[in-house]
Image (tube, rainbow over all chains, first blue to last red; front, side, top):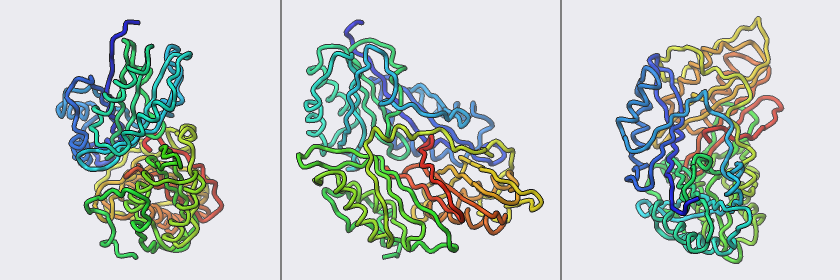
Length: 206
Length: 264
């Protein structure tokens, strides 16, 4: 594999609701994917926009998707309808690609600079089976940031940069932030080019 | 203790730096009558420090008996649990003991707590309730005011069945913000008209009550209108502030299958 970097940001909204033309509620889940370099979506505004759909009527799900695309065109949209609510395989229990089958997982906490509310989540580091970074190193790194203010992407960049110094081989970093306002975030970064789809999974408490 | 206007709901939030049980707020449960049951809370954002100041993370489950005289107001519980983040405890058992004592005092009944390893949570996520979903029924919904008269049952036909819906919505009593839930109704008795049941559940859409009160009202409305000999109503709400509430009400022996649904 080439040693370049790649990544993706995933925004999961668990409360997508609208009405059909008979006034009956419809429900779905929304997953947005965007490049790490694309402008970050304002999740607060997204939440408000999704709430505004609660009382609106759409003739079918395609009309709803059009409305979502009109709201923002940066991210790739995936609407998971109620009929596709399937049992969830979480990241920490998933069978990952063999080259990254060794998983080290840690809780993380830092503070939102706008609201003072904590972000809580998981940092998952995926390595080849024979590699392992000392838990204590990563634990110390995450502990140091516990009460500091970060925008989520800035935190991801710091952890990724630290791992690049600690790990000489290929790795995948997946940081999952638990929901706030019904929206959770997943950030995947890797120091090699690879298919990211197997890593696009909810974390256990996300 | 019970004036809701004195609670933190709808007010600017101040996150606490250290363990502080004084933020807990109780609300008189009130209620429609006597029933058994439990309110199961899950805490997804729970963390504290061990004696080496190493952060610990746990999956919290809190069992509040339905017979307790007081509800625990959810924002106060959120802030109380957040206050553990920079506080040191000897071990998870001490954490459990502290939370049980604090919440039992507030609720006025014995509250039971477990703090599970985070990895234990991943075995309990299921897509849906076991039971028959009624959400595909074609109904016209032109009223979002709770209306128990929508409920109909056929006394000539006695059945045992489990009916489920993901379309339940109510609103916070104080803030008016939407709260979404899945509901399961397990009963033996006159067969309930499913389309009417769905319309009844959807009629909660603009209703402003706490989660526990909504599920309890569903229970008593069905009990009074449909007269089942046995009835269990279970609600699984989406989380708010890192906590989800899962009220269960029953007039018979029931088994709690504490699953976590797709949206939780």
